[in-house]
Length: 415
Image 1: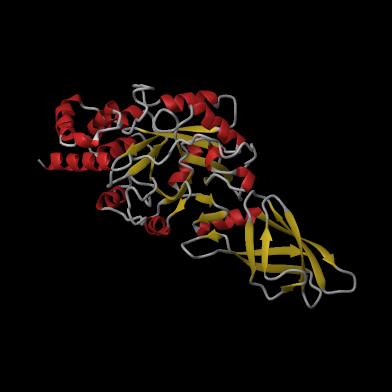
Image 2: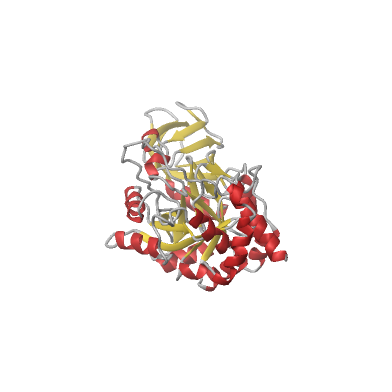
């Protein structure tokens, strides 16, 4: 009886919401600019691999074929791509029926053949709260994360019959599929993903369709997954949204910080590169450019996020990245002065906003310095006396190592 009540709640929520995925098809492309290359330097002892671990194609609720996702990733300079189709939610099931849930990955992997792009096998476990939506990547067989037990058809149909008034306008085959799939407990799907060695992360915990106030909160189910070592990461960035609460959850529970595009349309429709917008990405600090090394880095929580020109990460991951991004070089004193000319170079696509915390002031700038992506600027430092070494301390205003906490970097150059 308890199982029936739970199933009824799931299906009631299903039919009363504007359906679960949040990618709406657009009729006109917003941007025809092909720019948008993303560049980040490696860090000491690690490669910096640029990834998008949450994307969709027509094999669930996306609006492009998997090869388009591959092409977009290559144009953006990504190193890693995961196409993570909804297992239970299949709005194109009538038009694009497919029994094998590994198809999207196989199509994308085929399209990437011969290139440097690493395509990861993944799926999105799609449930109402709790646990909501969860991505599993590095899966071996997505089919085993879905259980359409025909013995439950009568129960699913009985529960659906009570809600027939809400079925108007919906694809009945899709509704039947989702209802039957949701009877299988989410805990078993997550257990199966872990059994396959998957890296599992909680998607968009701030999503207003499942968190009406936009606040990410751990349910007892999520707490159980964490205690059992079955939940390894959490999206603190999804599409155009950021969750301070999810950031705190990650820090308090040692979860990897994940940021994704969750793209459904063309990437350039959602992120206007000609206006300086960029897709959110997760930066993974791996020992080698292999899937095994990527997986190890994710399980070790070696990640950072680039989102709306903001860099986000745990201090131990973000500081090495910032030190690789920013270079400083002295070109000497102006003749007969104690005004030192210094070149700051940005080795990444990210804008870096700096606030001077050192004892020195600048001759041609305030204490606020903007260092555009892939560029260098000159500042003149009033050192008062001639030095043989300069140390400048900066707070990085558009970087976060915790909610509302900016990191500081020390830049040193010989003169």
